[in-house]
Amino acid sequence: MRGRSALAILLAVLLSVPVVGGTNNTTTMQDEEVMDPCMEDPEQPCVNQTSLYLWSNGQSTFWSHFNANETDNAADNNYSQQKDNGAINIDQRISMNPSLNKRLNMTLDGEIRVTLNLTVTGDWTNDNDADSACGPSDCEELNVTLWAGATQIFKQHVPQLSQGENTVIFSYRITEEQTLWDSSTANPSLQIQMKLKGNYQESNVIFASGEPAEFTLGLSGDGGSKVEMPIDPASWDEAFQAGGDDDMLPADDGGMLPGFLFTSALATMTLAAVYLPSRKDSEDIRDRT
Ligand SMILES: [Ca+2]
Ligand SMILES: [Ca+2]
Image (tube, rainbow, N blue to C red):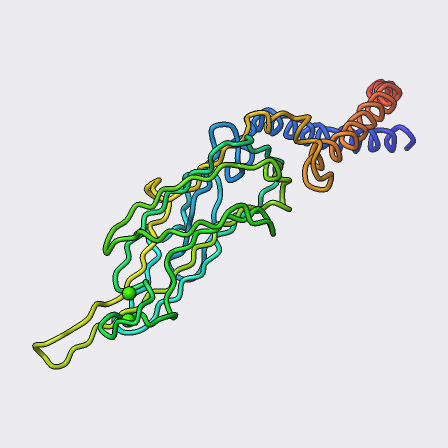
């Protein structure tokens, strides 16, 4: 009976240990697979991955991230609003989602370069002209604002749009106070604001007057609209990343690893301690049969 229960314990240990060993192997393999830090978190900024791309479902949902691919983006790669007669009020914040979880050091005096593909028709300049859609104060030309969390990096007024397709390109240089973007507290967000008006009217079947209003933002599916950022390559240094928010960054490595090593060592010791005397027991059992 004692030999049999010892064998049972041995079997239990032998059965349970490979499970721990399996977990061990899996974890090691995952660690090796994520050696490329850009693969680990493909929507986060990384080496050679420093442009913020703009996405929408084509309705009222917008988001952005640093991966040039997004399967949930609108099929026609556009966000569009049209109104024959009346106002279109655009005020969208295109925030990074998932949120920024890295620390970024922006190069001082480095250029943030914004490219936006826009199609606009109708009127967006204020005037006292009775024939044009906008009144003296009810429209707004394009404004583009970049936020790092609650901090405004710039607000760019873009007055020179023409009827139809536009490619808006402008750049802004990082100032000394704007170099450190510390993970989630600096989650980037591009805000786009514009108020347009249409005054298209059909007097009868034949005669029509005025212009309809349209605002169409081309998204990043074709690589067109984007925000290129002057992220200093030193940002990818582990020591720089570790200097950030303790809750955000080293939790996976710093928190998990010591505990895991301890479990692994304990399992190995248990196996050694139980296996040696148990083998003698099993030989005893074999001798008797
Ligand atoms: Ca006008
Ligand atoms: Ca007018």
